[in-house]
Image (cartoon, rainbow, N blue to C red; front, side):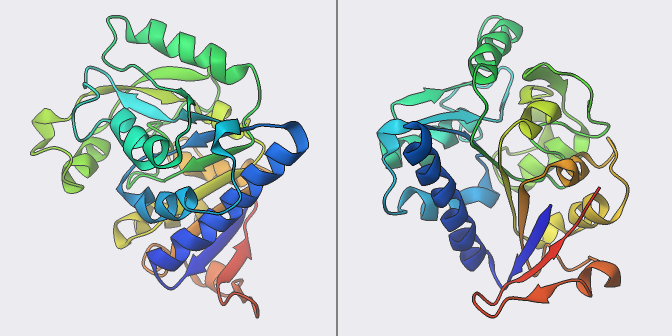
Length: 266
């Protein structure tokens, strides 16, 4: 796994978008289409804005899946990840082939199973992720299930995860945040050929430290990214601020881009 650290989230978002765009263009050239998994959250705004304006992508040849959705929340709610996917990606690019998780379906388990069948049929070329303040990827809160092979699972959201949504102003208070969600499983995320995690901001610093300095553990869900052969984590200086000397000393300055980068293993 490669960690890259940038001065601010705008530069981070642009650099991550360039890598993502290249992966999409390459997949289209090689196979005629690209399959992506898209994260939708406040931390992804700069990245998605840069990606949707990247040149040379034929979005009509891109199929998009998203990571997670609250159970019982309508798509009209500002905190709905379906709504964010539509506003931040689909409407900006004109993607016509996209799969939405219907968290407000009469049977969320059936909705998850249907989406999972579509997702598991062909490996994704690249998955875009964020990392939560509690270290989650998608809605795999600690202790995350690292064993299930189900593409999507029904999960209970912990208090830290729900409080984060209040902190990001999607909900007025924690009582309004749903307690369950449909989430892509950790093992399904790892099946993507390439993973790109965009993790800016000081509120993510503790999770970054726990996931990339401690053991690979379900208690630090994003730590599992260290087992993937082609994962890149994009940080800014604030989200990387608590990384200890062992990682800080391993960061090598690139003469071309000015970012700092270090490779981290399991």
